[in-house]
Image 1 (cartoon, rainbow over the protein chains, first blue to last red):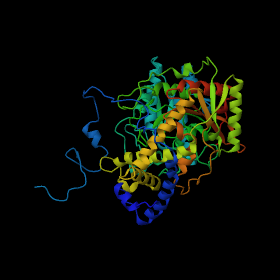
Image 2: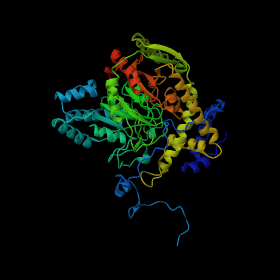
Image 3: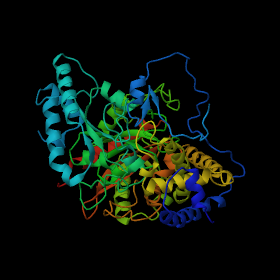
Image 4: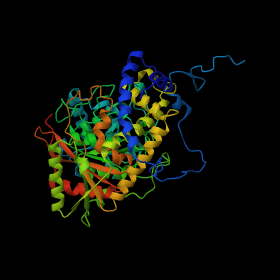
Length: 96
Length: 469
């Protein structure tokens, strides 16, 4: 199985050097080869388990309870502005 | 005061008899940390000021006649638990400068129960590993032989207790990360049922199996801590409202003998020295009136594949939030192991591959769960080795892309099924390295596994032996 590591790194938003990607390519393919043994197990009659607790629709009353203050929530951010997080520009065009 | 002899139970008695105060005890641990840390690197952060402050507060409470379950007991906390006002890194440089603005529920409950926090312990970065070698801050050393790994991912936690740098520790397990290092460090490691202990505020690895729990010298200490940690938490929707118990009291009553399940597949590829000690332990339990029954369980070797896909998929999703905007550094700070896991998980969840990998895995997971449920119709517990070998030399990890998953082979199936398990010491190898055995119980079977663990411990007392460090 060939893995397009460049594409995967882009999807995962990981800045990885070309050299390291080459190493990862072989390692990931090795791992995939290992886990491909799974395909031999017959699962035609079973449904998947997404949750092992058996809990369903866990709700709470819609009541405001004490939480982090704005100051606390921002306390680890490298860049803030007027009490907000500063995020990188993702829409290039200026909105007028 | 001889730190090695101290357990939560006898320390509380010594407080009462005024043999020493919580402050004196805390100072003794801080002194020991000071001496041993250059050798061991079990801690990433030592919270000296906070520890002294907490201990003083506990002494005041004791003087006022107040009591709480863990009043004045010094603990170390694995560094993937958010601890308010304290640096919390999960051993990754991505979070090198992150100061937690809130407490994990586990920490909140422990503080309410009166503990003193000595510091935050080293681990595999993001809990990705079984040796602590993937920590961005370097490996922790095993107190029994500092040329060896302590196990992981809660390796700093286990090393801190084994070396008497702390009286007890909090770790977390996704598949083997509590039981494993407890095994290689000669300790008791309790991985509770998934949902028994809240995950709120634990830096997530694989959310569908993450389980916080105690690492201690004795079974009773583990039970006492579980009493504090267990129970529904409104902050974690997957935490269970299944009734909790007075585990430390109930485990001392063996009302009826048990049927112990043994599966040969759990002894394949296991070091003969490890197998021998576990067979001896089983013989001892038979002498105490328990029955052994051979069972056939889903091959643990195949669970490696299930766990690899399941965990890496969830890892890729959980670590997506590490963007360096709200906290921490950007994604260029991830190291190889995290990058590999994120990449494989992203691949397994990506369009066109989801059905073949993630969905297929979740189906096999159903088979594993049904297999265990079927087994527990005829046995009370299952016994197996925890790790297949004793602690290997530092450097074992090398560049093996699946080292962690391979080492955790015997703890993965029960973790995938959300069961509870406890690893206890059953003796030493010729090289005098600890050997551990796990007792696996059904969901919410904590009292049952603790009963057997406690009975065995009463007969053997391996915990009294201490490393020469």
